[in-house]
Image (tube, rainbow over all chains, first blue to last red):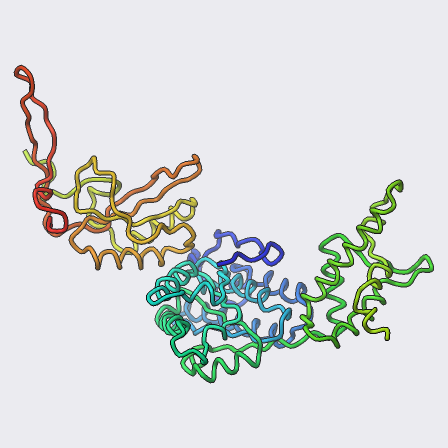
Length: 320
Length: 144
């Protein structure tokens, strides 16, 4: 079981507005929106995440369905909780975990889950090492996720067709049972690479049919990645050198870097961007470190210049 | 004089009330979780008030966020030990040690024989008193 790294974790929502029925039940969409504050999460999703248009659309659809269900319930109409188990498929670094976290908050604000926490697990956390170890382990994880969202990263590893005695199958069966019978207790989100998830579903049709929402995360374009880089730098209080004093613009250098990097193998979208920026920060730090006698201004300390980026191995490999 | 008719064991919270429903237990656990207390399920068939060593059912549940997981565990324990006492205890760790803040019984045997007063004569005409649970005359596991 791993907690999310701090950059992926945002504050847990406060329970002050938790699904308690208010004195006067809201009857319009805007009343529900105001009461549940789901608008802020949706806006955050809209602005905080670059690109991902189809994903955002689907999240809005789900939010709309839940809002309308609330209204139906207030009017005394049947409002059966919809099945909200989801599958996020996409290449590495396309924002699957981030969206899962936002999803947990949206579901919580609309009262679909009671606590709104996200438990992120992988095969290790669910599957045991010997006979009889898997079931308690899986149940333990499921108990932890009750009232929130269970996020299973790289879910296709649960099923290993090459080993028929693999315990993964047992974990899948327990998962299926809980996904079916305790829909109001937790939401399961499976995530993984597209092609391997497809294989996983074709060999586990029961799993596929219990998941109502299959969301595909498209790869980012170079421009989107550049905007992601801008956002990351703003968060870290850095900025690209704008090239005003006759030097090359660092943003242009980074754009070129991205073009070269995207053609290379193992490109991981936003994650590669973050890694590239982290390495540029290292180079900037040692550049400033070498000037031991200079009093650095705040601007110097927060500027990445083109040389910091140009020193990357990617350019050297592309040169010949 | 019978002050406790039906011989219901009165230990911990709510023990003078009728048995808590699942919804009431859920509400109590939610309260404990909101205070960041760790909740555990324990069982025993030795109800002596000085018996502090109840067996723990399963692992302590430190990182559960929602009461439904606890209720599942309580029900599993009720199924396994239908004729035992089962209690839910909430521990507060802010003092540096896990100190019990809440404790209430969620399951009790159908027939509780209660306690007798045992007298022991010691030096002179002095008498020592102690309570003795009728149930513990039988060996463990056969008491209720």
